[in-house]
Image (cartoon, rainbow, N blue to C red; front, side):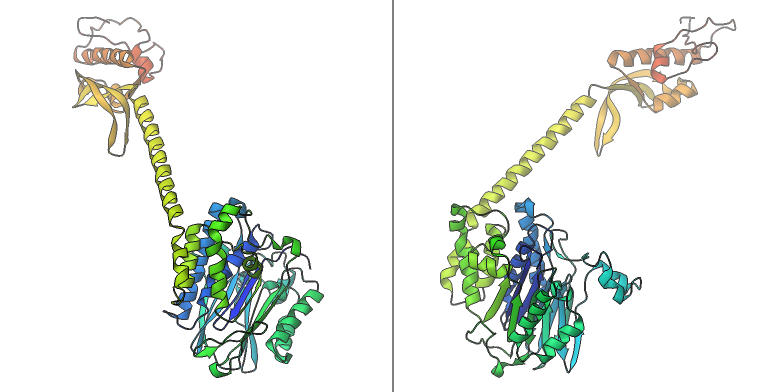
Length: 491
């Protein structure tokens, strides 16, 4: 009753039921829910190759990867996400996978209970004992989600569980639009009193809309029955598939506004060439797969399928989806070439990636070379084999690469220098250029001779500033800089 488009999607069939609620207020919430639901519909079959809970978890993670790819190719969808609550039947056991704040309820042996746990900030506060359950409805952050599918986490954490099922028990999956208006006791009363599944879902949706419905509402009710007694799902008559157990189901949803319906697939409107190239994989394969089994599809996923604008990220992801659908349909040989059509674009993308990486490598090499060339314009005075030496470069190293080399090794022993200058030379003395470095060495040579050949006892004349003082940063004392004398009285 408030939102302008429907971000919910749902699917129910013989073995699979899924409800997904696209994140409200984010661009592409309808795209996220529709893409995720359509990525899971191929699981609606009895011949799973692995445990149902493993298969369901893997496929939801794969659907999450496709959402991340979609955001990469369409940045305007950044921030989109969706909740997922799905159950997959295998024999007499059902696997449940859940993330977000959509819910799963069960009515079994007269007991009605919520099976899923909301991944919300408020629920975390309740679990930690910092908030009472009755305070949750009025909390200002009650709709803040802590876990969802989308482009925020490459491997989101799912709640996974497996339950034994018996004929007669009922399950209810719903988006949080139902809980925003109806209390659990109201939901239980409708589920117990309704004469059939269709009446249950219709009543729940009508009560939600009558209560103001601040969010989209989608409800799926599933009943477990013996295989021999399984009818086709309500409103969708079709042949019954074989299996050890069957799940008839009914679903209802809040219809999306007609003017916004064309946006259900998200992203930009494809041009004629893209539509012609992708439509065999994007629409027909999925339509053919859906038509092969009794099912109900509602919300954004249904609208996307009807319009042919199924949210597929790239031709590579289209191929992946089509391959998953077709690998379980041995009699559908005609569809096999369609899965090979995206191959040329994939090769082009590989070459584009190689080209981009090559350009980045070239730019990095250029930057490193320019930096190295600059270091070779610098000089400093240091030590080599316990002698004063002039170096070209800088005294640092880059990994195993030394950024300097000896230009000249003098005959001045480092040990002949005064302790202060010896320490400074060991730490290296920077020079402006080669001429400056030679001047510093000349001053150091005089210092070394002064130590080896001390001056007579008469007072020495006051020294004047020297190149060495400039280079080493010696400070002027009361009598000026230290005088540098050489043997023979030269100054």
